[in-house]
Length: 438
Ligand code: GUN
Ligand code: ZN
Image 1 (cartoon, rainbow, N blue to C red):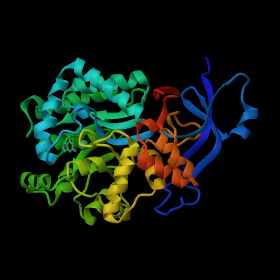
Image 2: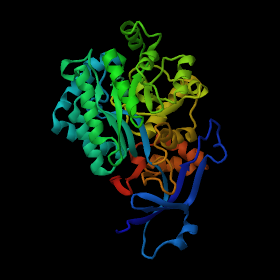
Image 3: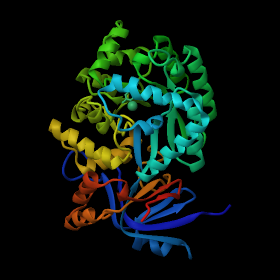
Image 4: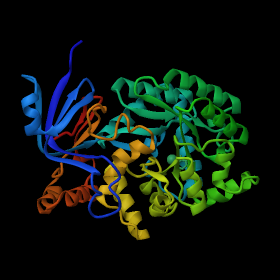
């Protein structure tokens, strides 16, 4: 067997633990190597160290890629995004329920066609890589072919992805609705074909309480109980109109979260998108079960959903993840997500440090999604998914960068001013999969 081996020389930054909320990262929470070497071998990281320390150990003739002046970090993770909504991003008008009916549902009908699903899967993955995102938890449409197309495209590129077929058996156009049991059978077939295949994992995907009957939610809970290695993704308490509708549809549930609890959908691999309109007792119930809330700041502002209370979640011991929620979100870029999270935080008196933000996009998201044994850090044995950031990518960034004195300042400037131009290269599975056009 041949060994595929190469070395990157660059500034390296990786988180080892939550850096806390302070202006300086908690002791031992970061690993920062100004002149570092990242040694890749067969899709994994073999070593990460000072360049000067590693250089004498290297085999003769190993390829060395010189990225001095650039910053290498683990690939960004997006914990909640809809690939089928790529082309309806930035559709004008109103809040969640109207937006779903006017734009989202008609758009998702197009994914019954395999060719369309395949073309959009590739377009979406191109965009993710351009933004430096190497792993995402993805909503497909309710058509099984939309899931086959997405997993197939991800597998061909060797990407670590979680995804699932939307389950929906009411309150949507007929062309998108499952027969209650049929949607579950389709899900079982997709799990058998894709879950645990290479770098792929299946995430059970009931859209949200209003579009599933109790029978469908219960059957989804049954799948989850049968296989604890499955993930689950849905929406929770995003919009006040949605809250009223859920109360009306589920009069036997004491609150929105209880609808999911009663079907056994709340566990350590469950991601609930939004969770804006919750009280502290509900946050405590989520925390007790080890679930995570996906904070989707650009979507929450675009759809006028509300200001996520990040510190209340933190106080409850509840894990939060960072997510774009495209097409409700206005940007696939993790940097843009952090910028929006900072802005939401400012309006709440909860500003987000760059330490907390970049921890969230990498190790924080990996941990909350139970993927931290594979991705989320630059460390020996982990999979070689990372971004090469150019802190001086544009004339303006170069000017700002020249005035920064500390790493904290440089990170914060990138989080507020950066975009896909800041991502020089994206590597996944040990291979360069994107390089910015000059
Ligand atoms: N709630 C139910 N479906 C959706 C969706 O597609 N996007 C968002 N933002 N919220 C939802
Ligand atoms: Zn969503």
